[in-house]
Length: 143
Image (tube, rainbow, N blue to C red):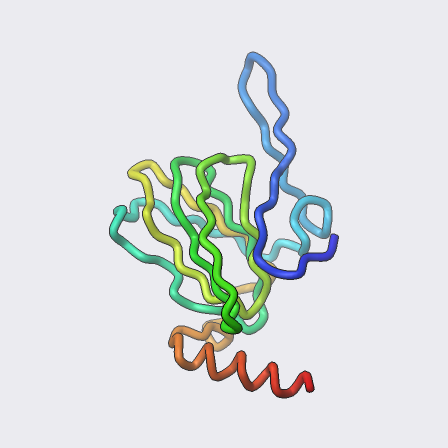
């Protein structure tokens, strides 16, 4: 499984009269990395914006397991997208060095985040201008 940027993922849904089951396996099965950290966001009002950062090392898959929210992503090179998460069988893959903002949370929203790395505060870029500068520097190093 090779991913070139932020994109929607659809997970296999199984179920019968007893209900539904969604399985997300790491290591390249459903999730394109080994899952090292899991956290979730809930109780955020519709007007709250979460995230507002990029990560130097960590990849994410974000799934609204209940309710809905929107996720705005940007790569710092002029590419931007807004994803709506409102089905528990879909998620968004976010590679490293993507600016992310989660917002427009429904009252019942539970946003599950699967991460490729353990938490390290120093790999977070929390200032947007710093993010743009780092992306420019990395782009120049590639040439």
